[in-house]
Image (cartoon, rainbow, N blue to C red; front, side):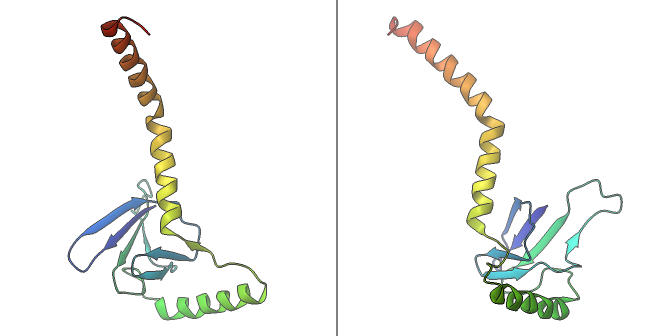
Length: 128
């Protein structure tokens, strides 16, 4: 899922995330993930998109925000009574997952570059 966070000063932060939680953490606080807030194309070939705006509680396009907030508060109450943690997609968890995904994609290339750099270094300076 593409997560687009629009700030008040006109910037947009786009990240790919696999969100399974009911709330999404952004710099301005928590945003609930409502039923009608995920945008998809008609043939569902592209990634779904979730658009969040700074300072606005519900995601862009969510018309059920009031009902979903009531359900979310009910879920929070149930989780507290069961001594469980809330399901929140944290910013630092998403950034670590993105860094690990990037490292997994680029590690073979970095390894090949390191081998080439080592061989060039040993050929210029006469071995180790």
